[in-house]
Length: 152
Image (cartoon, rainbow, N blue to C red):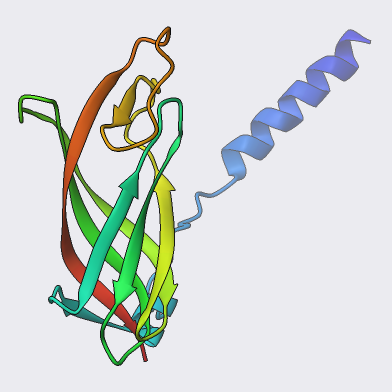
């Protein structure tokens, strides 16, 4: 039994020593065009897209806003910067958000995105009032459009 075990170990050592290294790095790879580059035009922000109706209730994991398209093209998405401010106007947080939203010309759509408030203790000052027993802090927002994605 000992001899069989020693022979098996010796065979494993010989096999490992004789195995040659392989180069697994692939060369001459070409990038595949993404859907965003093939289907959309990205343009700078303009005044023909209006954001309104922002809302984030206490304990909500989503924020939402209304996007109104006054352009002759269909909007496929927008990039916005959201700045969160406390009651005294001090910055709490600031982030860039990419929002996918299909908004045809001359129409309005609601768009939702993940909330910045992971602990769910903040609420937008114009949202429905929080329960009096729930400890919560109100905030306001400044939202600016960074870019717009148009459907080709």
